[in-house]
Length: 92
Image (cartoon, rainbow, N blue to C red; front, side, top):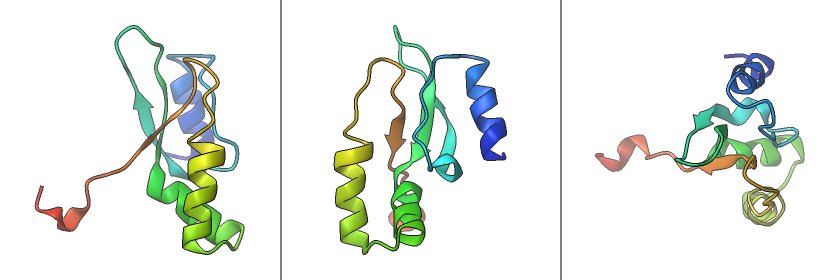
């Protein structure tokens, strides 16, 4: 799904869902937790990959930046979530 369409799709469920600017290409869906509104879900590894490619960061630098400045930014119940996907080679 195109990034703008993904944001519109989540907005149908929660107009106040916040997005992580510049990481639209890493949206994988939405997350629902009992008692909280649905929020945008991002692929953590894709977010880091975006930082490596877009901002020309080394992987370690991008991972540290992401953890502190992106995933570490809690702004309430509408804050996005960042998912670590099970690797295909894990046997799971």
